[in-house]
Image (cartoon, rainbow, N blue to C red):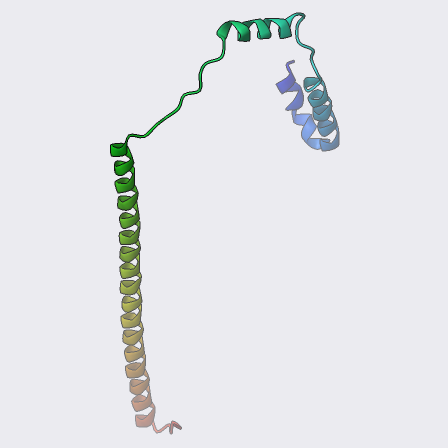
Length: 129
């Protein structure tokens, strides 16, 4: 039985404290410190010395590229502002649509109440205002 099967046995569901203890034990064993093989540090240092040190790469922007970067930044800014204007226009349209729906609902409610008042008056029921 491998480790996965040991940790996932159906019986473990009935005794969670034991399965947790087993899991903790497996974890402790798996995370124990392991010393590197003999001569590891020497091999790494020797390989680093052979590779030498590479000079740092310096990136210089030409004036033309700097201008292009500025143009790109300006375009992004204009795009962001334009997007905000579109968002505000949609929000305004939604508010106007909601106001129209509210006005229609109020008109329908008023008409319905007036109709009910008329029916009550015809039936002889006095409605107080």
